[in-house]
Length: 393
Image 1 (spheres, rainbow, N blue to C red):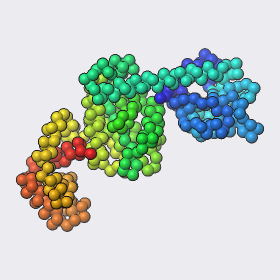
Image 2 (image 1 turned 180 degrees about the horizontal axis):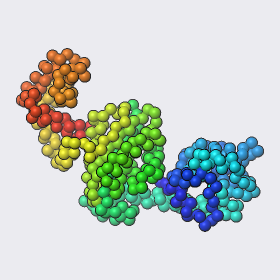
Image 3 (image 1 turned 90 degrees about the vertical axis):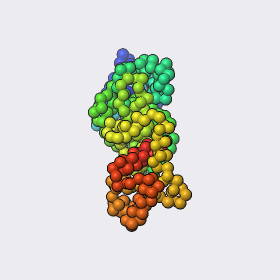
Image 4 (image 1 turned 60 degrees about the vertical axis):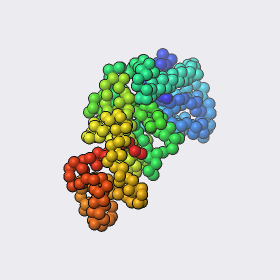
């Protein structure tokens, strides 16, 4: 996991650990630390580290300034410079560069053992990771085993998540060329997303599940959730997504109390499936439970047998006909419903003659034993397609 650089600095303030430049970068996230004494070693940085140097590896052709710039370009979160026999001073050009790029640079005198500072930092990062793993497991148990309160309530309260706060679960998926990105890419996104969420939101947690990457917002009102979602979408697109990747965000119901977390997760999960069925995976997409209209009512149906029976009663005759004849009557009906029963608009979208649409609608009415010109029949069929979008993938 990671910690905020500012928090690490507080733990060594008594050790003559001095900020020289780049103060605006103190809210950078630190994932680990690395000893970097020349530019070649800096290429091993993966991003998010705090780099330490004594300057022992610097050659006549490589200045400390060159090393600082290279460490910054390799996306380190900051740099600690040990002043002593190899580095006499931190020059004005380094200070200017660090301030201009919000890159924290610290000075430590030779008499202070950098190994002790590194030990303190390492311990803090490892402890943060352990705590985050416990919290992630507790949230997962809250989502999947809500009746087993002993698996999550105490852990979340111990992690400073209050039992009476509101909670909203968000599922994030990233697609490339219409398919979910690889497991390795998802893990990379998870690390970057965790760091970004730590910087942007005071009470939010990122975890990784089979259903996707999860962000849990705590102690937020509905309007705050909407604002957070817009900010999250914008920042993920700018900082994390590659040019050929697209984002789907599904924000579940904002529920009250730790013991109802599973309700928010379930609504976010259903929205996520709905997005995968009806949204273009080659475009960014955002769904928020509070804005989903009739879908909110449908998501409250907990009995899966009722959903299956409803789909069987309404759509199955058409689906069976398509299977037997190799036709696409169900797709035509779906398009017809989306265009409010307009034969002209349906024909234009499907690139077929209006007579073909009229014939297919008449055939569907025969199979379904209804009159699709009536509001009741259309409403019934529209709801069936909504249920199909939510529960079929």
